[in-house]
Length: 578
Image 1: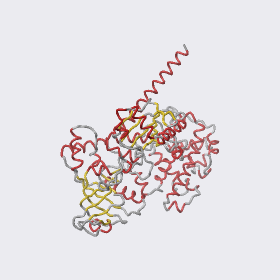
Image 2: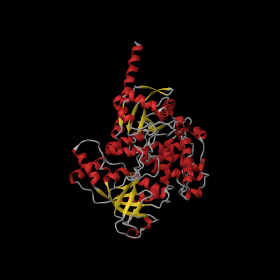
Image 3: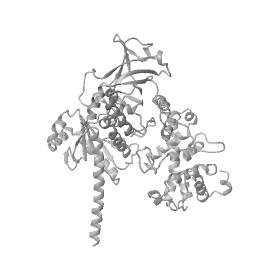
C-alpha cells in the first residue's frame, strides 16, 4: 500500500511539473514566433553532432539568425546543466555543416530554410531560458560564452513588447542579442540603402545652441522610424542606470492605431528623438556638410541619417511611432496600416549631440526633456521621477539607495528578491525601502549629529563628491557589503522565516525596521562584520508570522527600537539619544 501511495504522489508531482514545463514552452514559443521567427520543433529529437549527443528544446530561425534554445523550470543542479548546454552549443558551432545536414534530414519540409544561407553566414545563438532566476557570478559570461541567458525579467519584458507591437518587437530582441543590421541576411556591398534622406532643416540660427547640441526638424516615414528607433525603457532587460521611460501602454497603442486606420493621417505634434553620431546635411548642390557647418537655411537641404536599427533614441512619442507596428496578420487594419507605414511622414525634432559628449551627459539632457514634456501632459509615476533624478544627481540620497538595492539584488542573500521592474511579481517592493529607511543609511550628507555608512567609508570622498563614477560604484559596493553581512546574520538566526513565503521577515516593514536600527546604532557600535552581527541576533526571539507580527508601515522606528533594545542590548538612556 505504501509503495502504491508513493507512486501516486510521484506521478502527481511529475504531472504538475510537466504541466509547468508545457506552459513555459508555450510562453517562449509565443515570444519568438510572435516576433517573426520560424519555430523548429527540435524537442525530443536526439542529434549526433561532432562528438556529442545533443538535444535541443527548441529552435527559432529568422533568416540567418538561428536561436538554439534550452528552457528549464527547475533550479536544482543548475550549473552542471548550464555547463552541458554550453558545451553542446559549442559543438554545434564547431560542426555547423553537420548540424545543418542533420536538421535537413529531420525536417525535410524546411530544407530551403536551412540551406538559404551558407554556413559561414549562419549565426548560431545559444539561449538559456529559465523560469526562475539563474544565479550568475560576474565571470560566468566568460565561462559559459556559448550561451546568452534570458532571465525571467527579460522574458517577461519580451512577452509584453511582443504582445504590444508584434513583429516590430524583433528589433528589441536583436538589441538584447547585440545583433546589428550587418549581421542579418545577406552581406551587401551596396551603400544605396544604408542611409535615409529627410527633408526640412532648422539649423542653429533658428533653434539656438546649448552645450554644442544642435536641433533639427525633419519629416520621416513611419516605416523608417519604426525600423531605426529604440527607447530607454526603465522596465526593460538592461541593467543600465541610463533608463527613464515607461513601458508601452497597450491600450494607447490600440487607440492610436484605430485612429490611423480611420483617419489615414498622422498626428500633427512632433516626435522628439536623439540622433546618432554621423548625421550630415546634403545641400542643394549635392555637397555634404556637418550639422555645425550650417549657419542658416541654404535652399533645398536634406538631413542624411544612417539607416541602422536601434540607432535613433526616442525621447517622446514612442506610442505614436509603435502604433505603426507590423502585426503579421492579414486583417483589414493591418492592410491599411501597411500602406500608411510607407506613406505617412511624421514630424520629428532631433537632437544632434557633439560626438565627444559623454553618454551620461546625453542621457541626462534627454531625461530632462522627457520630464519637461510629460510633467505638463500626464502625471509622471514616482518611480520614473526617482529614476530621472538619479540620472541628474547620482549621489543624492535616493539615487544612492537605488544603486545599493540594485547591487544587493545581483548577488548574495538578497539576490533576485527585489522588484526591479513593474513586470516583476511577488518580489520585495523597493520604493518605501528607498524613501523611508535606506536613503538615511547610505546618504553622503547625514543630518547634523547623525551618521551614515558614508561616515565609515575610507574611499576617495573628494572624487565621489565630484560624481566620479568609479568612486560611486566603490561606495555602493561598500554599502551593499555591510548590508549583506548585517542581514546575513539576521537570516542565520531566522532561517526558516527567511525562506517562508508567509513570513513577515522580508516585508518592507520588517526590512525598514532592521535598516533604521542599523543606522541608529552607529554612534554606539559603528560598522561591524558578519560575526559581530551574528552574535547580536543569536538567540533573539521574534514572531514574524502574519498574526504575530504586529507592526505597520507607520511603525518602522518603533520596530527598530525593539531590535535595538532586545538584540543590540542598548539601554533606554542611550536609546533616548539615538
